[in-house]
Length: 123
Image 1 (cartoon, rainbow, N blue to C red):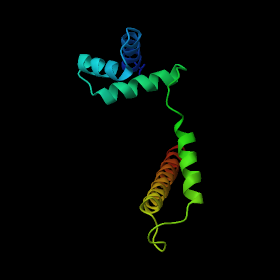
Image 2 (tube, rainbow, N blue to C red):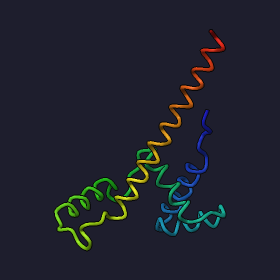
Image 3 (cartoon, rainbow, N blue to C red):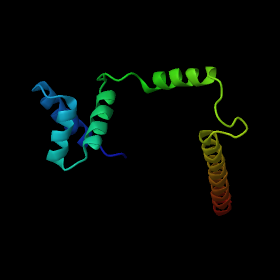
């Protein structure tokens, strides 16, 4: 059973208190980071994760919307540079997809072997 989150809600509460006093979020993140001996980026991540889970809103636009706009722009632009070679991102994604496929096959083989052993023991 997963543990109940305690750090995120505590960070969220403390940052909310500081922003209610008139500090900016950035300042509040730095204060909480100093209080908890954490990195301000970690405090920020905990704050926004908790805000999303509690239905709070953030001022940043949704990531998917920004990525979709960038993707649409990229598709409509003419290719630049060496057209014959694949971009690094494509080769990275291909390698990652191959690795995921290999690992999936490995897991399937392990599950099949475990099932075979269980059948032997029960049979």
